[in-house]
Image (cartoon, rainbow, N blue to C red; front, side):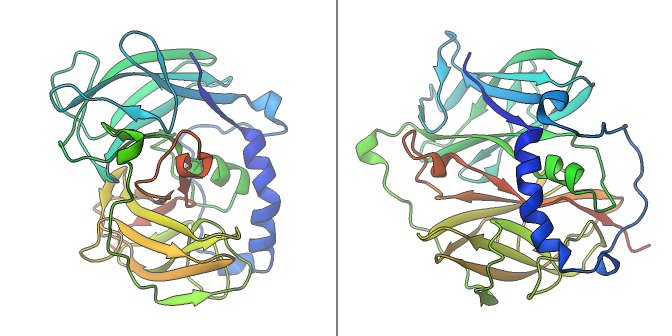
Length: 319
């Protein structure tokens, strides 16, 4: 089965870019604390030593479903087989999430009759897993996205670019639903006006920061804290984004009364939006996810298949 692979190499390539962003920001400005060690993270020296994660979908007949292609439903339900390769020399936990038109939905896994909105599974070193997934959908759905979260329970509270880079990676598979090529029109959406528009060269796709002038990383912060969402575009063409927020891997509004934030970012520009971290009863992971070119996913357009994640923020209760 053809799978998409993501490895430590992609993280290491990005570290130089991150360094340029963060080197100009004194570390003393970061909100950090000592990490609670949930599991020991190996020192990453090179991609070959660290390994990779493979993932993909196939239909019930065993045929590969290429990302960006069309999923067909039967009786308003999509049935697929998810496959994950944990080609890493360590035990690892993952979580599967599903989004219909960028809104989290419930689904069934294997022969379990119970609907879930997040499915956790553990994998042994250098192992593979396959499981059936059934997703009820609306008749007017346009896109379906499967997201695999690495180490969903790991809470990183200190600035470690290697660990943060691994945890920010969004392993996603995006598909259109029941649409012929001639029917794949761009759905009209209401865009949100940014609080600020900046052209400073710091055009990371999606970031959480506390400064308009810097992409200052936030690793831990208290609930309710006002921060800034930065959506950037380093290309020469406009990029449209659908942006969502996840708290403990469940979707929450990005802004008040805005579950999915749509914005169209001009070339070499970034849009800034003020938002508040949600309330929590205990420490929760929080992450923003940006889907470029919403409702335009296409097998021939690689950019429309991508998904970007911010660094995770550990939200702490005020008490």
